[in-house]
Length: 89
Image 1 (cartoon, rainbow, N blue to C red):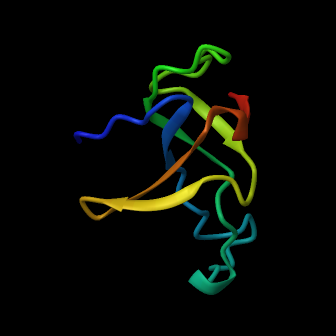
Image 2 (tube, one colour):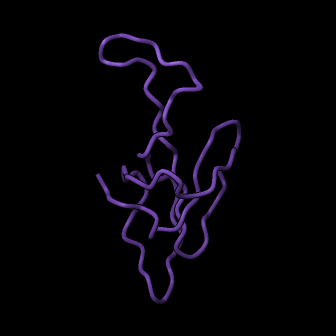
Image 3 (spheres, rainbow, N blue to C red):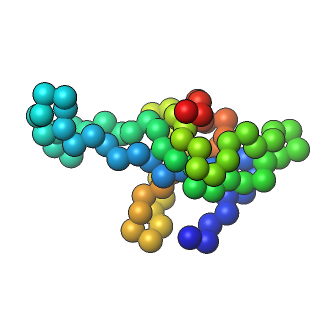
């Protein structure tokens, strides 16, 4: 993939939503919750006021409505500011 986020932005591949509950009930696509964690694929260089703390291959938690969804080569990704990331796992 040839994408490089600018400034303090990161590119994240969201984790897959769970297909079944613990009891074995299959969850339809319309009822699945948006995953709130993912893997960092690419990071920008940061800004003079904010250095980049996250790095590639970090697993991160982010807010439910954080970032912008984009689709590249048939895969869905999120691009967001580093400040939208809540924690590194």
